[in-house]
Length: 161
Ligand code: FES
Image (cartoon, rainbow, N blue to C red; front, side, top):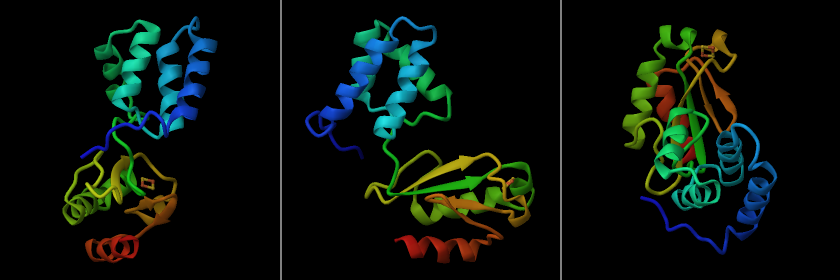
């Protein structure tokens, strides 16, 4: 479920984006630069903004979505208030990171890359978070939670509900 894009509420960000496009339109790799700026400004790539970029840079919409879906740094949906990153780096993977991820998906009723309909949670799979000694690990809003078990995961998520 996605709310309608609010042009008025986003006016300032759109102005900044237009200025950015103006200053960068002749650079090589301008699409990547612009998408990075959009991701930073909005936290995701709204469909309406992708259309605006398409018109401004004269790049087909399909190409923009091709790039946006290829690189994991871009998201096509708004993130939840609580962003859960489950580490699937080698150490965490070996220690059952995949089962932790499955448990979280079950608890929230969404899969990786999705946001709950109430906008409270989203789940990402991440690379090594630099806390391999605590594997398996997840990060919620920048805070690391380690030595996870399915039961602990449930308790921790409850704290954010
Ligand atoms: S592999 Fe998960 S923290 Fe390093």
